[in-house]
Image (cartoon, rainbow, N blue to C red; front, side, top):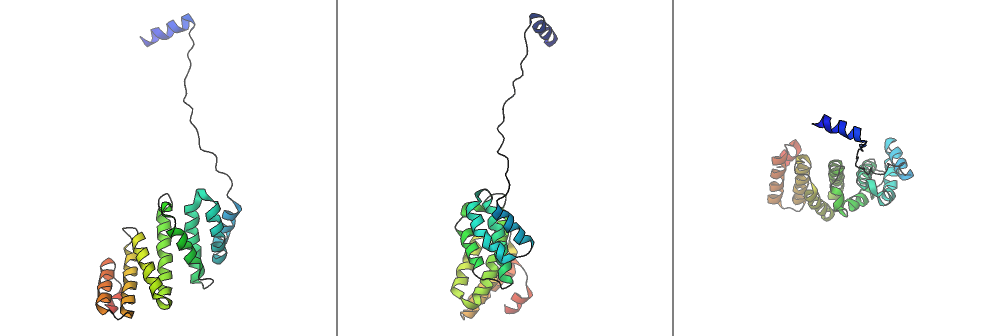
Length: 194
């Protein structure tokens, strides 16, 4: 039947036209901005303070990759502070994280959450010695933002709560926090405090 229709249409001079739907492709990805290149180079060369110094401007200007920039910013700030290069860098990166809940979804979600947790744990550990009230605020924020399966960070945070309660001379609360920490992950140092 189809052969007959094809022969008939050729005999009568009908022409066949193919209909192809048009697909709009996304715009081509351009060259990365000089800020992103400089930030990446500083990160590759382990110039953590330089990387964290470039990050705020890249974060505000390079909107398409904001999540990745914030992840790198947290990473660089944490590394710079660990080397003793600067101490306000992590606070600025964490403030940007806290101010942008929409960025917690997307392809950068998991690395961003991990960097946020590691950076906040480092800040908490430092703040417990200098400013315990600030550390407690950070611990609450960390527990709110942890991924459900991040037992390691949850255990460390609960152990920090235990340390704080112990400094406040609330031994019952300290014991409870240490117990909760150990239920998340076994740790010899926490077990000795418990």
